[in-house]
Structures are given as C-alpha cells and as structure tokens.
Image (tube, rainbow, N blue to C red; front, side, top):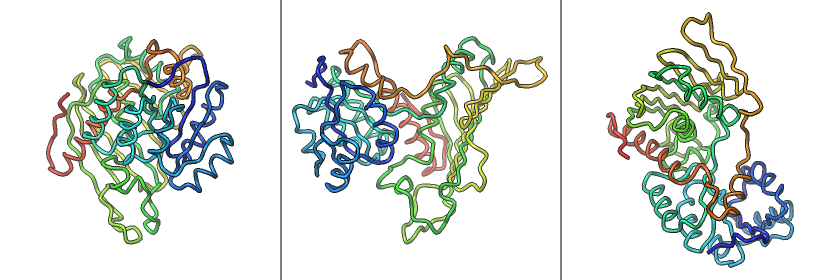
Length: 346
C-alpha cells in the first residue's frame, strides 16, 4: 500500500509534456512535502531534460514500468495521451500507488470501465482525473442558481465549442485527431460532457453526426471528425444540442445556454461571465460571482489533500465521474457509426 504518513509524498511522473510542466508542476511545487522522485517521458533523453530543468533531484527513467517498481513512490502522475491511461493506471494501482490521471480518461468505455473496476479493488488508494478548466470560476454560482430553481425546470440546453485549431488543411494531424492515440474522444466532447453532468445531471441518450472536412493530412487519413453535432437527452428531461468544431474561422468562443420554464442562463467559458434572467425581466443581466462563490484551479491541492487524509477527503472528479462521461463518448461514436439514437444505460 502507498504511504500516507507525514513524510514527503513521493511522486513519479509518467508523461511529462506541456500540460504537466505548465499546469500541474507549479501546483505540486507549492507543497514543500511533495517531492518529484522519478520521471518517465517518451524517451530517456526527454526524461533527463525534464529532470534537469524542473526536478534536479529526480531520477530520469526510460520505461514507465520500471518507475512503478520503485517502492518509495507513493503517487503516479499520468500525463500521457489516452492510449496509455488504462494500462498505466491499472498497473500503478496493483503496485500500490495513488493515481492522478490526465484527461480524457480512456480510449473508450471499455477501458474506462477497466480503470473504474481497478479503483474499486483498491479503495484505500486515491484515484483522481484531471478536471476541465472550463467553468471552474463560476461553478458554485451555477449550482446555486439551479439548486434555488432560479430558471425553473430546465428544458433546453445549447452548447457551442468552436475553435480554429485544425483549420489549416496543410498541417499534420494533431495527436488528438489520431484515433490510435486519442481513441473515440472527439474535440471537446468529453470535456463539456463532464461540465454538463456536474451542473445538469447525466446525459441518457444521443444522436450524433460528424463530418471530416480535411480527410487527409500529410498522408494520414483521419477517422476522428473535424466537426460534431450531438442531440441529447438529460435524465432531468431536458433536451440538448451540443456543437463542436475544430475548423471554424474566427470562432466566437465557447458558450452554454440553459433555458428553463422560469428563466434563462448563459455561460461564456472564455470570460467566465454568467448572464441570467427570469420571466418578466427586460433582458439577461450579469450575475456577480461573489468571493465566497468564486472557484478556481486547485487540482493539485485537492489531490494532495485527499492522499494525506487517508480516506477522509474524496478527490473529484473520480473514476466514477470519468466513466460517466466516457459512456457518452462511446454512445456518440456508436450513434455516428449506426446513424441512430443510442440510449445510455447506467
């Protein structure tokens, strides 16, 4: 079993790319009792470079399996693309390590189910997924508005996530566009499904259409669509339209609209501006995110606290929450393949 005593919490990083360097490492370094012990990146040379620049006392390693064999390591921090998540997670748990895993959770529903099952076999170990950064600042305010029935019963949901990341047809395929690396994950589908589940409850059925606009990228034939439209139903009865694109010129930014029987709410994910209004108002008005309701990025703090608490603090999002959004990712792929409505069974 991994140690959760008052000594230093020793972390082994597998996959030390931009997200780990720029987002997670600063958060981990804030904790004087957290130590980066070993690093395994895509090559030994890149592992060594990372250690020299960011963790001079850590040991660079060629193979991630060798990192898991180090008994002193308490935590495995997975920063690899999705195709490695399941194998590393299951192996790390079996080696007695707590696991933090970068999003998206897995390649498909089956791998996510395998990871969830492994976490249940080792309930004494903390397992946490990286949450999406979108909507964190206004999270508590949105939950408060919905809990207080400000909008009435939600009946229609619209979400748009348009970017120009893949607009250049001459560019090589990004790893997120390569199904052998990213699996069934498409654009920001999994990210925003997680956000929607947190605020509005589970999606229980989908009908999806996708389109590949630039089919060949430097000789690589795409399978993952450039744009995606999903009709969906929520457990609370609301209907939704979710639109995603990676090939939008001059995109307007990511936006959520929630329409209820008594009011409307919009969330601009780029600015974290929430506008809302009720029947009788002349227009929507900006809702103040007061200090006691203001959220933010404290992912590393949450994980470290959960590990140190020895079960008293539960880390979120956990593997159950990840499995719930991977069910939707799988259903969207199945719907596209069969051109039919797909029910999502719990």
